[in-house]
Length: 173
Image (cartoon, rainbow, N blue to C red; front, side, top):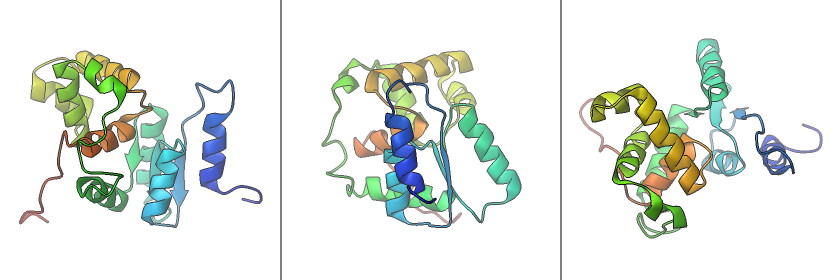
């Protein structure tokens, strides 16, 4: 891009006055570097995929982001979880707590922890024995109360606060 890179354009796009409903951004790049992933998410991107993704996966990623969800390349997800689980995200897990965390109900905290494990709304509903609509309500409430944009930010926060931990590598890997 001639004047701005994709990260700066995303940041400017989301900070523009009068743009509270700015379109969601899916970053598509050749750079599989932690700094790019973190900068993209901090700048307002709802997704991050690599250009070597298969066409059907790219199309699915576009649909996911357009539907208000988030998507990350698997390699970026592994590193992101490792980064936050190690406490490298500006402190140890649990050290930083946003003001709105105390306003969450126990159920909303539970849903936040399940979101961070990568479960979708249907899976969370089955796990908790509630309807998908109720899960959506809890997710929307916790995002609003915590001032978060999407499930990616919620996942980062959950790891940062120690609400969940990555699964240790097992024989299936």
